[in-house]
Length: 92
Image 1: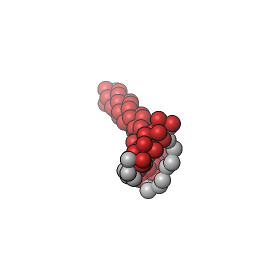
Image 2: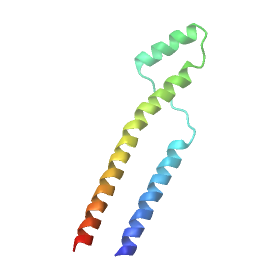
Image 3: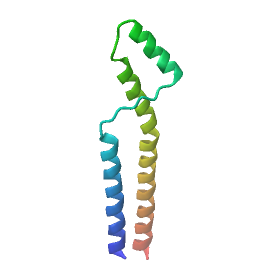
Image 4: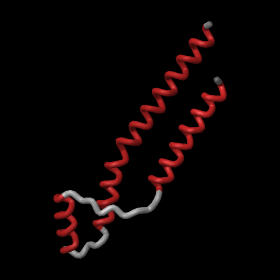
């Protein structure tokens, strides 16, 4: 049984590592809301050209943050469950 639990840990760590690797890959996203698009157009009219990258990075940040938050809560939940199981096993 201990080997299976160790294997689960390895799978979870591998999945987190793969997710982290995929998130860290450089890629271009051109998804913008109408308000961001209008802000970009007015900035380009003023002569600024780097605003588009900033808007895209902000969109990616807003997209990824809830998933990171969910992973933190999942980690804390799993840690809490394991602590309770260990405490129950030690009290027997």
